[in-house]
Length: 117
Length: 110
Image 1 (tube, helix red, strand yellow):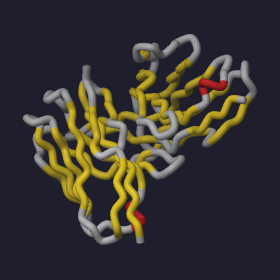
Image 2: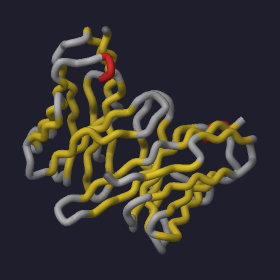
Image 3: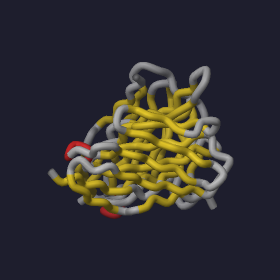
């Protein structure tokens, strides 16, 4: 099946620093990737839709200048949390959109746990 | 506003029981409905995907149904095992976005 990887799997950083998270589709090309955020014991909330070669589409309430998304190739999207603060600590999950002849679905990465001290 | 609701929020059952997890959604114009499993601190594992033209999907001990008219889906787990303990999420696919429910935390006691 389609595989999506994320790197790093977990990161601890100091408040005020920036953190970059990579999302890769390993065996298929994805023109669209999605970034989600999950707080403890809560569900996934869509942050933004990442489109290859164009600007990301952000959900309401998500600061585009804080969460920078770059989708430079058909297999890689990056999320950079700029000037991270403790309230940004969360589980970030990406997914890649696979469109087949009969179906479309998203394949999810294993997630990145961010802890901002 | 598109919303997905899951009931119950948590469930604890003895091993061997058959159980049903419920999911309701507000948008009848869905593309498909997916059920996922999430283990603590991990990503999502897709269990079953039901396209809007389908009524149910089966995989092993799992069976998921979809009723678009009533805005409901159920996940049936037969002969539950301790290894089934996890959080189960349903997600509605509408307009190229997945909208997730808050999940049902399942504990199967040995």
